[in-house]
Length: 269
Image (tube, rainbow, N blue to C red):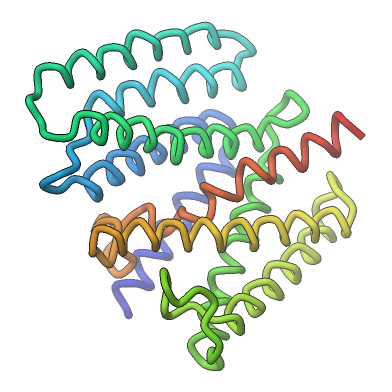
């Protein structure tokens, strides 16, 4: 428990620092984090029948998220995303020479990892640049809601959880825990609305509902992946917590939806 608390505290400090210190630490940190999550995903799913292209997949991911983030920072360099095309083709060519039993499976998991992890991190990073200038309020609010949901769901679930939420994929999750996380997320959103004026209180609370519901599905989806390959944690990078994906699975489903929601409020209403 002590190890878990220390790891969690240090990681939260690093994350908060990356957001509060400005656009460059924010951009660099989340590019690196996304690529580490992808590398962890490839390592997690690798077994006798699945052999993803770990190195080339990470390189291809870098050719996608780096130009996207550079565009947010400087409003140029997005054209470098075209490098993802030769990177993608090179993965297919290398697979020709690997002599593996399931080439289509290997390719599918390689590309799926990019879709599943890198694209959502692009959307999360975009939250910091809505309105064309860096503003840490949206990414910070997102993470606070996500953490509140995780904490509320854990505390209520472990003490009062009786009715299973999705026993087939995650036997420990309960409806009581879900609603505990939802309440914690909504309460956090209300507190945020008293400090940040970008959205109304109702809009912040709606964002929290999206984060909680989509984040829960992201958590369940990762649980399904892990159970399908008979592992408990996605990795061991975070002592006491497991892997990076165990901490950011909720972000992967919630970030794209939250970006669409805020974009709609700002530009489409």
